[in-house]
Image (cartoon, rainbow, N blue to C red; front, top):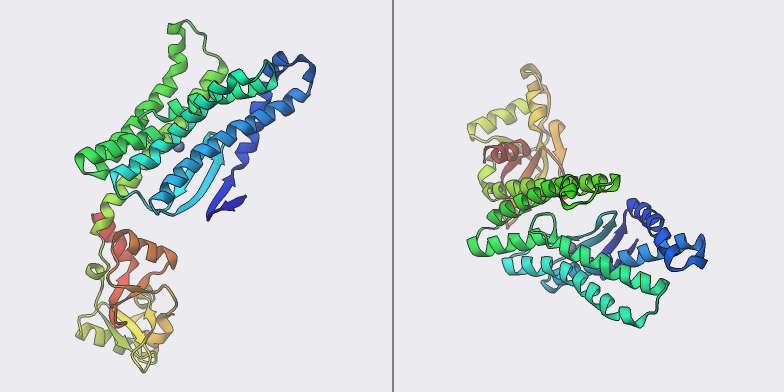
Length: 360
Ligand SMILES: [Zn+2]
């Protein structure tokens, strides 16, 4: 929708739906405040809903500013029906930074609630007072709910930072905070059933809210656990260790001869090189295996090679997440690993990386 300081602002379609829904819910209350408004109550309701989302936007902007203050790249701010989310590239490098980025959001919401509540006296009874009171109430709820210590809520990230700071292990923080999120999800699902013990009758909207919130929390917490599991395995991946030794062959060399030379050199892969030794292609292993033995003298190595292009040549020094990023940029079954001086170190087969990841 808009880009501010390199940060993209996106508004999901569901957002328009919720603004309409809020307008519908708020309209009767608005008619109570100002009986003369008539059907304008819906327009006023929509305006109040947009005002509430403007405060959600401020909450998200505070996360973004905290990220930028730590020189992190903020990709986007998304507004959706349950509020918003700020996408920050990479992860905080210290528990303190993680804590700050997380905690500024709820603090901003609580700050807006306090300011709105304090300024309530400036307004006489009427629509403006109603709007400011809604702003105070909604931000108090958003601020307090977001401090619940479970992922994916901000409070979960605060807990994660705390456990990380005390234990020195980021993954321990994620696991504790994600289970906090699952407990919060269960609590959300149970609350309409607990209402009668406090003398309230649960309505349909309570069950609906409980289900949406519970599902949102459970999914977010589970996603955090999965991401932590993936991340814990990544550091074990080293391009250099996974590389197959390769030999360079001219494109016109018959495949049978290329295979013979590779076996002699105990190499697991063939790289097609130009006369000056520059790699110009990688022979595709699957294509070799599917070529019958008696055809191999009549097929040239160049015929079974994928032409070299940007992204198929990657540094032999890449590890973990960087390595996966490089492979995602140009999906291929084989990559040429090169030394800093440009010479070929070997060939990285995507299948081997996959197997190593599974075995980790
Ligand atoms: Zn937040």
